[in-house]
Amino acid sequence: MAERPRFHLAFPVHDLTAARDFYGGVLGCAEGRSAGHWVDFDLFGHQIVAHLTGERTHHAVNPVDGDEVPVPHFGLLLSPAAWTELAARLRAADVAFAIEPHTRFAGEAGEQSTMFVFDPSGNALEFKAFRRDDQIFARD
Image 1 (cartoon, rainbow, N blue to C red):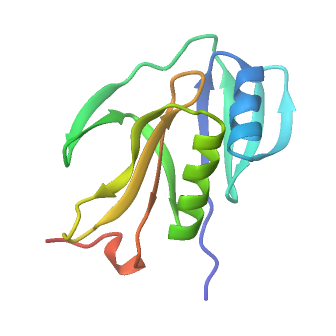
Image 2: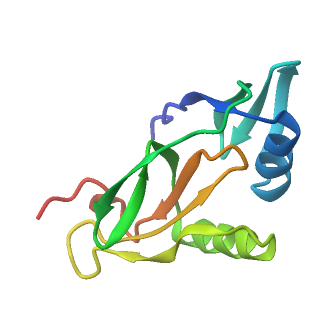
């Protein structure tokens, strides 16, 4: 099987200590390199970089299957077991869900488990899981 490419995402944060607490402490991301105004994290094998901007992120919403989905957002497709484990970890850390863990598109093509949280700077993150990979890009 060919190795899947990993993504790199740079995003703004208003406080690096709060970013370290959330990404490192709550999500369990290992910290990589850093400087005075940025820090790398390992998000399930992907490189994300928190850049200090001093401003909180603002977002719009878009309706999706009855939810007001924050836009922009980033996140990951996890295995069902990893998704369930992360939901429990977030609950144990008393992280408020922007959208509670639930099933979206139930009984339809693309049925998925999904949840949304905001980091301390207001960046929206979605974590989702499909029971079968062939449903990730399924159409009606």
